[in-house]
Length: 303
Image (cartoon, rainbow, N blue to C red):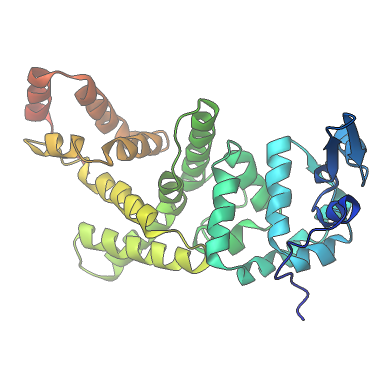
């Protein structure tokens, strides 16, 4: 009734199958019998022109399934195509329709968007087309027109880091992505709670963490196995500066130490005050037992 597709797995002729594809470049078929290419919607010409073109009327197709707007961004970023003016025209107006998509489905979509090696370009396109805010409403409130606030610079570094890891076939995890994405929200809410109350910093951090995750999972159902890792990465940001005595050894053996250290290192590229702490931990990781003892005895608490 609402014009949104609920089921779409009917099999038919190849022509009918081609009709159901989202984009002309998806409606290309290779015949293994005679090695011929069947192009039903002019996909080859669009590829040559570097265009991503929707099959059918864009507004109708986006209303049928609003996730098609995210697919347009994903293919544009991955294949280095430009979304055609006709296919791009309705996106900004229809972007709020993403709020009707089940949060579990949007979690799967964000993995495809941000874990495939084109996260930075994807983020920039989502912002350009007003699709970022429906997915990450809290984070959107922190974005600036210039796009160069400390948090935005940190987020871009984190996304570039993810893309570099994918390019090198190194593992990437949704936990690190969401920890980076929501970090600005956690920092801001933590400061807000500190100003509103006399709670100690650890408590304001915990309140901010809980709020950031509780709000985000309303839109995107991040499974608990990832949110628990996100929390640990954040909590370790508070613990890594406190490294005197046996604390350093305990922190170093923490299962999330490496992710938390990488996170701290990215933060230090935006906040120079953290550089000394990052260097200390870099030295600690390659040191032998005697050198570690020396480092521990000379460590001092850093804010």
